[in-house]
Image (cartoon, rainbow, N blue to C red; front, side, top):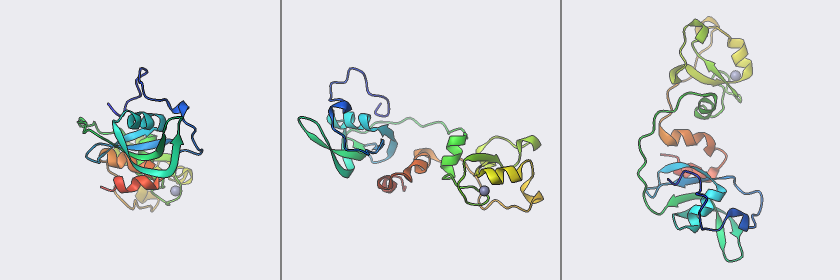
Length: 187
Ligand SMILES: [Zn+2]
């Protein structure tokens, strides 16, 4: 599978052979041949896919990776040359990482940067750990809300939390760091 790690026996040049102009993007968005997003791969994996003819560079940031024999546009977005069938993925569980990604690291209560997860209906009062009951929250709001129900402290949730849908939603959280990815994740 293209999203898996490079086999040890790969015969294509290794990334160490390239003189990389730093800072290089640490990861590359990999699309299927149908241009659907598949996953994010490390730069070394991206180079391997291109050098072996399994992927082509759709977007580069303009820099070149140089080796003794060739130069390769530094890949920001790749597409596979042949379509791969991707089995239906199981829904992501709500974890701190996936909830913060879904909510773009924005506190649901005040909009500032969030790095904690709050159970809207507190677990201590019967709230469940499920997508519909978790939101990103800043530490201050999380501490102030504590074990209260929203109506008890006059707070309102501005939107209804739901499970993220598919790889688009999952990748959207990391796309903010790479503007070149956004066009491919907009669907
Ligand atoms: Zn807050």
